[in-house]
Image 1 (spheres, one colour):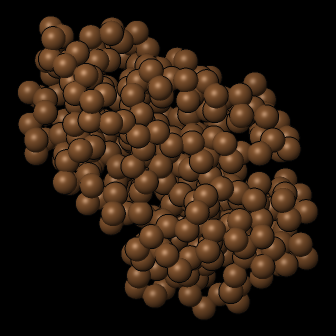
Image 2 (tube, rainbow, N blue to C red):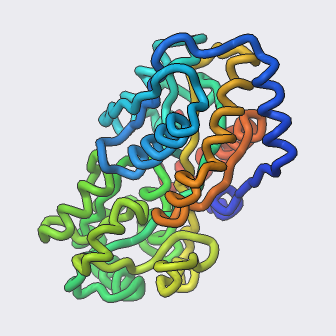
Length: 331
């Protein structure tokens, strides 16, 4: 099976010179937004995608980076396809954007969505976010070894909440199981609108565990209602997560980045792309964004439009290989 680590570990940083160059291009552009801008998120309010959207919205508004209102619109559903279908209905209109995740590729490869990454205009990759395996505080599953042992005995005895199939959280758990000799096709995945909804089900005793982002489970973990078994980062994270082992430390594969990015409808002009690339590059330099990076456990990894386009092409090839190996590819 192809190793997903290359894509998952891939991170880019943009230096100050590059950011100034992008801003200079936008400054020379005659294009400006003329009506309210919608940042559409594919998950419900409170989910990790929603948090990214609202922090970036606040950063843009507080710095007055654009001359029009910027709103966040939640369009959950369809395994994260409804938001993208909505944005795709506005070709050439640079007032509609989607908070994209790896499900953009996964959904197409699995045949869930007819929309491929090339059906959109890449604007910028904003951040990486790593998957955590989280259980109720009093769960008998104390660590990843306990989890693997239970899955080997009966894979269907462990219900695993994810926010969508084909996304990083789903694939991280599937790859980890396969590396431990467990058929990932036998895992019992339960899809929720967001990982924050799934963790509520865990706390209520209706679900065994959640494979989801740290921000989605952070509040209940800090409250002592849940425990994180491991994180999918390529190395141990800092701060409050420093004591949490990685999946690799725990003896299984599955390093995975659930990146968050901004995409627009197809047909945007070079001037429109340059304008928004400059806006988002400035937004991620704000104190608001930097604080969110620290508080939420995100990993800043800004990527320009051109870099992000190359990244998506590479990810498409890799996801096809992984999902084909798991028997999930349809395209």
